[in-house]
Image (cartoon, rainbow, N blue to C red; front, side):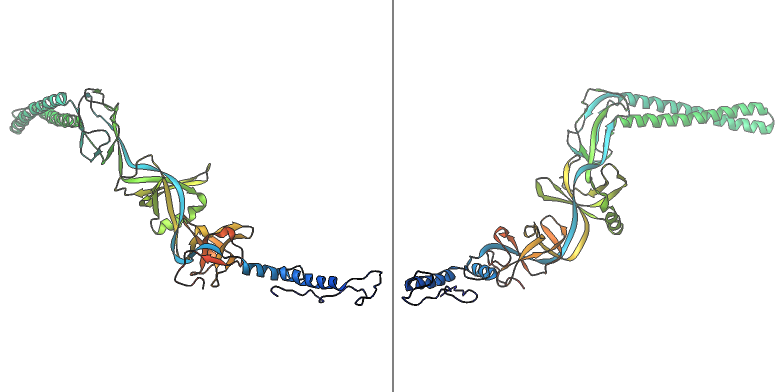
Length: 408
């Protein structure tokens, strides 16, 4: 009879003294058919389950054997090199920012670019009316030529008076007066040369060129406006190749950052919110010289080439700073790791297709994976979907069957 259990001590009749068809003490008779029913009922209850002395472990094992296998999805435990990253939110900053102003006053004659254009260093941006400055340059050059003629004549006269002085024809006082005049005219020529150079510079300032390569912002003036020297912003240019991303990390990471950055530039990966497929790679370029006492964070700055010009100044981005690289790390998918009263655990699928609840120690949590410090070996299979219906020892049915045997 399947599932039959005999109670401890065997089957016992009542302690009454009775004989078939005889009177019993006390004064009633139990017929034979009742005895038969009691015996048959005892066997039936024993076969039905566990009311006749089966242990709880036996009952649990019998229920497990008869329960259907739980469908699960598994993934292998891997050993590989992983980068431990600190995620943060950063702000894009221009590599260089220039506010363009005019160095001379005058009417804005022409604008040679459109708002938002990408301009290169030396490109012509604005033209201030140059005619007044051309006139000033011509006057300065004329004055220079005049003083040069006078200076040349004074030098010849000085030479003659020097000969006359040696012959004793003129006095020393007369010679000194001629020499002083010649020196004054030579100084005047030098001043005229400086005036010509300044006039030429003022004329050059009428043609405003881009000091850097970058993207021009909004146009703040238009042709026909009267411009004063160094008073009004004309346009703002941001250099975006390369570009900076500024972000902060908690101060407890500062010692690791200092050590790692002293060896090699620390890699930084920047992604756009909502577009994780767009990755911009760079290096840590700056560590601030003080920790912010109000937030307990340290300010860092990464330099990125931004050759595609996908990053814009002022943009909020996701930043991942690589703190260290772990080699031969034991890694499992993040979906496999569960948390409960026993702590952090995973379900491991044994070779006999049963689940084993195993406690683990987590070393690092990555974006999609978890680095395990203790509790797993490479090659084992862990459940990544279907954990809700699992218990320790329950049979499982692996949905994503692998040609290699599960478990090692």
